[in-house]
Length: 193
Image (cartoon, rainbow, N blue to C red):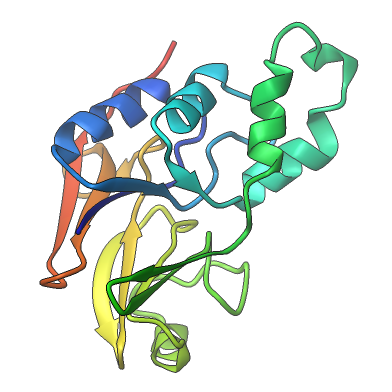
Protein backbone atom coordinates (compact mmCIF):
# COMPACT_ATOMS: atom_id res chain seq x y z
CA UNK A 1 0.00 0.00 0.00
CA UNK A 2 1.31 3.47 -0.89
CA UNK A 3 0.45 6.25 1.53
CA UNK A 4 0.92 9.93 0.73
CA UNK A 5 1.78 12.01 3.78
CA UNK A 6 1.38 15.75 4.28
CA UNK A 7 1.62 17.95 7.36
CA UNK A 8 1.75 21.56 8.46
CA UNK A 9 -0.32 22.84 5.55
CA UNK A 10 -1.02 26.09 7.46
CA UNK A 11 -3.85 27.29 5.17
CA UNK A 12 -1.85 26.85 1.94
CA UNK A 13 -4.29 25.17 -0.47
CA UNK A 14 -1.96 25.70 -3.45
CA UNK A 15 0.82 23.85 -1.64
CA UNK A 16 -1.53 21.02 -0.72
CA UNK A 17 -2.75 20.64 -4.31
CA UNK A 18 0.86 20.65 -5.57
CA UNK A 19 1.73 17.91 -3.07
CA UNK A 20 -1.24 15.81 -4.20
CA UNK A 21 0.00 16.10 -7.79
CA UNK A 22 3.64 15.34 -6.90
CA UNK A 23 2.80 12.24 -4.84
CA UNK A 24 1.13 10.68 -7.84
CA UNK A 25 -0.96 7.54 -7.57
CA UNK A 26 -1.27 6.59 -3.88
CA UNK A 27 -3.79 4.39 -2.12
CA UNK A 28 -4.45 6.82 0.70
CA UNK A 29 -3.36 10.24 1.93
CA UNK A 30 -2.77 11.08 5.58
CA UNK A 31 -2.30 14.53 7.15
CA UNK A 32 -0.24 14.83 10.35
CA UNK A 33 -1.93 18.03 11.53
CA UNK A 34 -1.77 21.82 11.42
CA UNK A 35 -4.13 22.19 8.49
CA UNK A 36 -4.84 25.75 9.63
CA UNK A 37 -2.98 28.32 11.74
CA UNK A 38 -3.68 29.48 15.26
CA UNK A 39 -5.49 32.55 13.97
CA UNK A 40 -6.56 31.76 10.43
CA UNK A 41 -8.88 29.18 8.88
CA UNK A 42 -8.89 27.97 5.29
CA UNK A 43 -12.12 26.73 3.77
CA UNK A 44 -10.11 25.69 0.70
CA UNK A 45 -7.63 23.48 2.62
CA UNK A 46 -10.31 21.81 4.72
CA UNK A 47 -12.49 21.20 1.66
CA UNK A 48 -9.56 19.52 -0.12
CA UNK A 49 -8.82 17.30 2.88
CA UNK A 50 -12.43 16.39 3.59
CA UNK A 51 -13.48 15.80 -0.02
CA UNK A 52 -10.44 13.59 -0.77
CA UNK A 53 -11.09 11.53 2.35
CA UNK A 54 -7.72 12.43 3.87
CA UNK A 55 -7.40 11.02 7.36
CA UNK A 56 -6.18 13.86 9.52
CA UNK A 57 -4.99 14.35 13.09
CA UNK A 58 -5.17 17.60 14.99
CA UNK A 59 -2.03 19.66 15.36
CA UNK A 60 -1.29 22.38 17.89
CA UNK A 61 -2.42 25.13 15.49
CA UNK A 62 -5.69 23.30 14.76
CA UNK A 63 -6.43 22.95 18.48
CA UNK A 64 -5.60 26.61 19.16
CA UNK A 65 -7.84 27.79 16.33
CA UNK A 66 -10.75 25.61 17.48
CA UNK A 67 -10.40 26.62 21.15
CA UNK A 68 -9.63 30.32 20.82
CA UNK A 69 -10.76 31.68 17.44
CA UNK A 70 -13.47 29.54 15.82
CA UNK A 71 -16.24 30.92 18.03
CA UNK A 72 -15.36 34.62 17.60
CA UNK A 73 -17.84 36.90 15.82
CA UNK A 74 -15.14 37.83 13.29
CA UNK A 75 -15.29 34.25 11.94
CA UNK A 76 -19.03 34.25 11.19
CA UNK A 77 -19.70 34.38 7.48
CA UNK A 78 -15.98 33.93 6.76
CA UNK A 79 -15.52 30.28 7.64
CA UNK A 80 -17.73 27.34 6.74
CA UNK A 81 -19.12 26.05 10.05
CA UNK A 82 -19.43 22.53 8.63
CA UNK A 83 -15.69 22.53 7.90
CA UNK A 84 -14.90 23.79 11.42
CA UNK A 85 -17.04 20.94 12.77
CA UNK A 86 -15.20 18.48 10.49
CA UNK A 87 -11.83 19.69 11.78
CA UNK A 88 -13.06 19.57 15.38
CA UNK A 89 -14.09 15.92 14.88
CA UNK A 90 -10.59 14.79 13.92
CA UNK A 91 -8.57 12.79 16.47
CA UNK A 92 -5.21 13.74 17.98
CA UNK A 93 -3.93 10.20 17.34
CA UNK A 94 -4.62 7.82 14.47
CA UNK A 95 -3.82 4.11 14.55
CA UNK A 96 -4.16 1.84 11.54
CA UNK A 97 -3.55 -1.85 10.89
CA UNK A 98 -2.01 -2.32 7.44
CA UNK A 99 -1.82 -6.02 6.59
CA UNK A 100 -0.40 -6.89 9.98
CA UNK A 101 1.74 -3.77 10.33
CA UNK A 102 0.81 -1.05 12.82
CA UNK A 103 0.84 2.60 11.81
CA UNK A 104 0.63 5.39 14.39
CA UNK A 105 0.17 9.04 13.39
CA UNK A 106 0.42 12.01 15.76
CA UNK A 107 1.29 15.65 15.13
CA UNK A 108 4.50 15.85 17.19
CA UNK A 109 5.59 12.62 18.93
CA UNK A 110 3.69 9.96 20.88
CA UNK A 111 5.17 11.21 24.17
CA UNK A 112 5.33 15.01 23.89
CA UNK A 113 4.00 18.02 21.99
CA UNK A 114 7.46 19.58 22.10
CA UNK A 115 9.63 19.91 19.01
CA UNK A 116 11.81 16.84 18.54
CA UNK A 117 14.15 17.46 15.62
CA UNK A 118 16.10 14.89 13.60
CA UNK A 119 19.46 14.37 15.24
CA UNK A 120 18.23 15.14 18.75
CA UNK A 121 18.78 12.59 21.53
CA UNK A 122 15.03 12.23 22.00
CA UNK A 123 14.69 10.62 18.56
CA UNK A 124 15.94 7.37 20.14
CA UNK A 125 12.68 7.18 22.10
CA UNK A 126 10.88 6.17 18.90
CA UNK A 127 12.43 2.71 19.43
CA UNK A 128 10.09 2.32 22.43
CA UNK A 129 6.93 2.93 20.36
CA UNK A 130 4.81 -0.14 19.60
CA UNK A 131 4.41 0.53 15.88
CA UNK A 132 5.99 -0.35 12.56
CA UNK A 133 5.42 3.16 11.17
CA UNK A 134 5.24 6.41 13.13
CA UNK A 135 4.14 9.50 11.21
CA UNK A 136 4.34 13.02 12.57
CA UNK A 137 4.98 16.60 11.60
CA UNK A 138 5.32 19.72 13.78
CA UNK A 139 9.00 20.50 13.12
CA UNK A 140 8.64 21.22 9.38
CA UNK A 141 11.71 18.98 9.01
CA UNK A 142 11.61 16.43 6.18
CA UNK A 143 12.93 13.16 7.61
CA UNK A 144 12.73 9.39 7.63
CA UNK A 145 14.70 6.92 9.69
CA UNK A 146 14.38 3.71 11.63
CA UNK A 147 14.55 3.51 15.40
CA UNK A 148 14.22 -0.08 16.57
CA UNK A 149 11.10 -1.47 14.93
CA UNK A 150 9.65 1.95 14.12
CA UNK A 151 10.17 3.58 10.73
CA UNK A 152 9.66 7.27 11.53
CA UNK A 153 8.47 9.60 8.75
CA UNK A 154 8.05 13.37 8.99
CA UNK A 155 6.83 14.85 5.68
CA UNK A 156 8.07 18.31 6.65
CA UNK A 157 5.69 21.11 5.71
CA UNK A 158 3.33 21.17 2.76
CA UNK A 159 2.40 24.77 3.39
CA UNK A 160 5.18 26.75 5.04
CA UNK A 161 8.58 26.22 3.43
CA UNK A 162 11.83 26.19 5.30
CA UNK A 163 15.26 26.75 3.80
CA UNK A 164 16.70 23.46 2.58
CA UNK A 165 19.85 25.07 1.20
CA UNK A 166 18.24 26.21 -2.04
CA UNK A 167 15.64 28.53 -0.57
CA UNK A 168 12.25 27.68 0.91
CA UNK A 169 10.72 24.43 -0.30
CA UNK A 170 7.45 22.71 0.44
CA UNK A 171 7.59 19.01 1.21
CA UNK A 172 5.61 15.79 1.49
CA UNK A 173 6.35 12.07 1.55
CA UNK A 174 5.16 8.75 0.18
CA UNK A 175 5.45 5.55 2.23
CA UNK A 176 5.26 2.09 0.71
CA UNK A 177 4.05 -0.09 3.58
CA UNK A 178 5.04 -3.32 1.81
CA UNK A 179 8.68 -2.46 1.02
CA UNK A 180 9.16 0.19 3.77
CA UNK A 181 10.51 2.53 1.08
CA UNK A 182 10.00 6.24 1.78
CA UNK A 183 10.15 8.92 -0.91
CA UNK A 184 10.87 12.34 0.58
CA UNK A 185 9.66 14.97 -1.87
CA UNK A 186 10.34 18.70 -2.06
CA UNK A 187 9.02 21.27 -4.50
CA UNK A 188 9.22 25.04 -5.00
CA UNK A 189 7.10 27.03 -2.60
CA UNK A 190 3.67 28.00 -3.90
CA UNK A 191 1.19 30.06 -1.93
CA UNK A 192 -2.54 30.40 -1.82
CA UNK A 193 -3.71 33.98 -2.18
